[in-house]
Amino acid sequence: MVVLLAIFLWNVNLEQVGAAMRQARPGLIVAAVAIALLNYYLRAIRWQLILQPVGRVRHSGAVIAVAVGYAAMTLLPARVGDLIRPIVLARREKLPFSGTLASIFTERLFDLWTVVLYFLIFVVFPPAMGQLDAQAQHNLRILSYSGYVAGAGLIVGTLVILGLFRFQGQFVDIATRPIGRLRSSWRAPVASFLNHFLNGLRVLQRPRDLLVTMGASLVIWYVIYWQVRVTLLAFGIDLPLRAAYFLVTLSVMGLAIPTPGGIGGMHKAIQLGLTAFFAVELNTATAVAIVYHAICFVPITALGLLCLPLVGVRLRDVEAVAEGEERAP
View 1: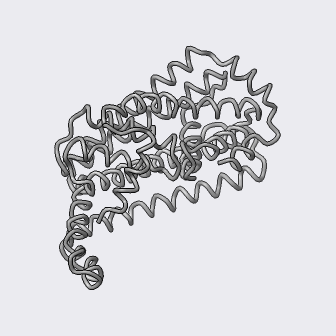
View 2: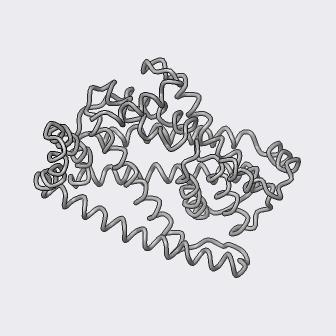
View 3: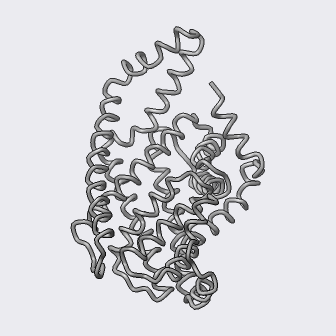
């Protein structure tokens, strides 16, 4: 994280960054915060849809688990929030942890589908990007090819998952045989975990639920793109909405680096996207990256910390809870 922040701030004039932040329109910043909170609320609703094959989930339980999970993701390394969220929900709603954990995998799969789809729209119908230098054009071509490869990979991966549903019994039997040879008493718990895990993915097998959840994902990410556009407008940067499709794709790559809250990686991705591809001045792009990251993570982290007493967990115990579930058979 320290290295990434150093790279992000290299050659940056902090006084000019501060000046750009002070000149940002506060009303639009507040609007972007409201849009960010709406996005997290929509994520809780989509999570309920994904969890339908596992069990009925109260709306309040999903909202609280989302808030606590994203707070943990902001404050703890290695994306532990993605593990805390299903733990919290499983305990509050009396659901199998393996099923709620699988729902996170399903959620990320829908997110990848949607991000790749919007990015391919950007590739096919690119907005005006000014005069790109040779390096920027080369990088854009590589990213475009990567988008097509990622789309093909997602299709293949989804087909593999659907095949597992058709042969679930045989798959679980084959997967647990080596474990049974090591210790026979372990085979039944592992088989139960795998069956619950696959049940958590079954929204992919139900056409109506699949379409509804995919529609919800398209709405969630469309809201995120407007969040980016409103943030840019706050700094006087008027780019078309399709530019946000590209910037968010870069930010998702930055978030893949497992620093707390994507600090450093997300900042650099947004800064690079604005300066290299949309000719935004470095200090202004740096200010946008800092403010946009804060919009994404500060409000939900505050809400998550407020919700911690509702789930009976203290912040310093959160990582220990996650490690305990990981060690459980």
